[in-house]
Image 1 (cartoon, rainbow, N blue to C red):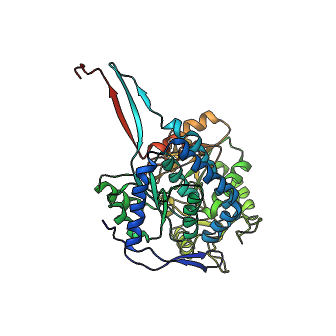
Image 2: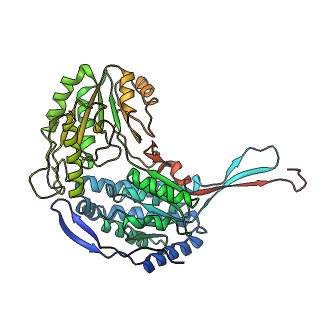
Image 3: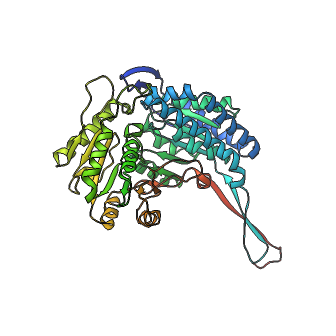
Length: 468
């Protein structure tokens, strides 16, 4: 059969530091896409029978190549989407750790699981399901694809990737790395297609399931398309994470943690502390500390080691965030610092500090995906929790304070998939990542990540004379 993918304009790498086009790639034809999916389907037939040991060898080799090439890969990510080089290199190292984690533990996670039963024996056998479509965003161009690729390829599935159109070189080089690591052709393949054609791929009967990280509208569209074909999906759709500072918190530590956490990746992190929630009595003191740190932030070339804040991923991204800040100001919020585009080439926006945000403002509820620090205040803990839960999102969150038992009590009342105590929402191979509410469903990383796209098949053995 043929998968319908229309010919579209080329896919480009545009360096957000200077808005210059670096490289262009042709969009794949219908026939090319059909062949890639067919090859992935054929590869699955043998890959699912490949031993865990051999799959692990491939994943370990991928990890080794990533570490060897981390400088090269880091520069490529910085070139394509603008993040600080030190952040890009850290991202590559994290990906290597995730590949090693599943290579080391995949066989154990997927071993037959015995079940208690009154007669005979029963167990769950975890089996791969087929070709997965992975649809990923640009903000962590290597990490996002690693989260879905590492567990699922270890589980015996094969994968086709539709990456964000502004990071095509990162997308292609990961396929090259898999081939260099010894993965059979078709186990992991990149697709150069426009986003509007993804739904058509979901309908292809050779695609068994889909994993998407992206916007809420994109997630709703993909979930609907997958559901209509009775296919499983996992979605991670962003967030507006709360960061509750308790009365007993060290304000110097809280200020540093929140400012640098918010400026990470120029604020383009789904789990950065987008809404800092502070006791009202501490506002003046805390604000002084935050403003002092803002005064030290250097905006500039992401390749330079002393740069603190990089450009946003694209000119449109910078324009969109500036418009959100302007709207907050129009609605009565206090823009204490920044809020404007910087008069220089590139997708730059001033690091921005906003206070006095009320439920009558869009900024109270929406996600702002840029270097924008929003400060809320509360009179009591119940109000802090109410503010934390006031958005439709539920991805991550943090509670910061010396009384960790009390912090855990607060964490239990925050409607999110993850809460970190005395730390911004973080990332580790062994910890599950995912949200609730409109932040999506499903989990990646940890043991949970390898069970999303396997068939937990029950096998029960009884005496042939048994009555049931």
